[in-house]
Length: 262
Image (cartoon, rainbow, N blue to C red; front, side, top):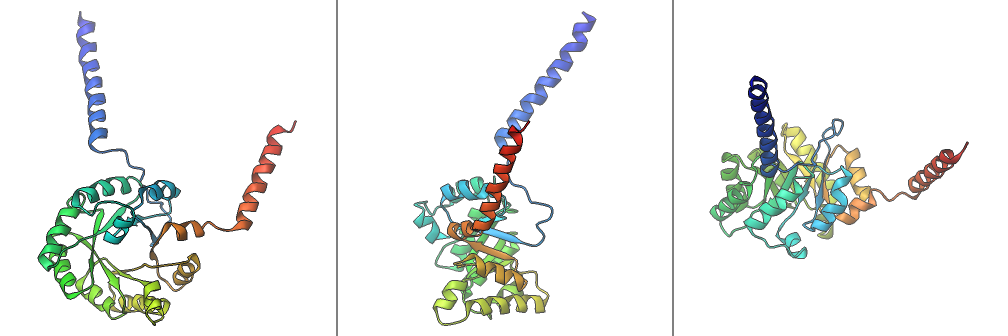
């Protein structure tokens, strides 16, 4: 009986730990997110709301986060609602460190209220995008004071980097391709934005968007820019190198031959 008295509490304690572990896994689902130790300052984002593309590309481990906006949500047939953005954030953050989504509203207060509601899911890992307009800046100021991380979006001019730096927001997203479409040199505009924030000693990141090819990303990285968001086609283009594919195939063939030799 004495032995039974000693074993029973131990068994109960073991069961309690197992039950607690199961409960915690239900509350906090196992995350596949992992920041490689040698990534440095580089932050690459996948720019799509198509969750099928997330499943295909995010497991490759190169993406720091996912970016979306109402237009991308519409293309992916995803509702532009706070509830759905919380659902998407839950999925994206299983693979990545950040989820960026855009607030909406006709006034600064509307943008603020929507941003607060969206970011409520996880204030440390959800970044709220607002247009770099006077209304957006007012909303961003209120959101920042409330502890919300901000990305100014729809940036078309290097002078807007001054707004971002002086407002103390974390990101500003210039649309390189669209800037070029509108008669300016989008590449040079982004490069000068980086010079502006560096010159001011600001920690604001230039999140280059509207990128249409992988070579442009490589060239900008050579200029010192380190934060980019791009669509799935460009993500796949980064891996498009026939010489590497051929070499990998040769390695596999050699391995197969070696595994069957005496």
